[in-house]
Length: 153
Image (cartoon, rainbow, N blue to C red; front, side, top):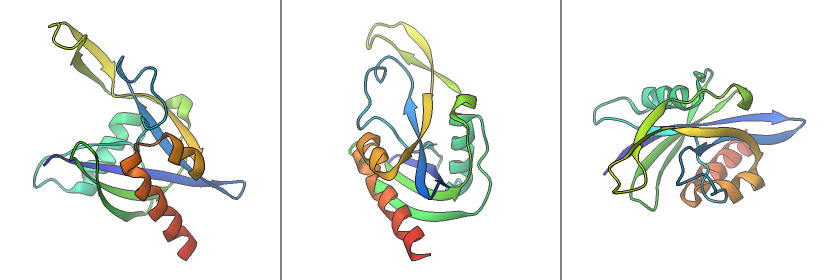
């Protein structure tokens, strides 16, 4: 089973909870919006510390290292079978400063042609309702857990 770790960055802006989501780069995702966004995350190796991987992956996808107190949001399993472990962290990020790593894909599929694409092509802050409409549906429980933990104080 593939494992991924990520950070759900959040902030309170004018009393409204907002979360940072990223949109995957590349031609496959170019015209997709609802259900395509994600928390910044990435795969990590067996035996690697999951929180350290989550912090590294956030930095690779956004160009900024998250800092602050991290608290566990637990795990979810995505439709593709990938296990995602996530943490919440309060913080600030300017989407205009997004600087994502690049990766290579074969495009079009089975063409033998290689294309260099950003891991993520944009980031934005969303209210919880906006985020629920855009995030990968399997990640919605992470939003719910964040809201519940903040409500509980």
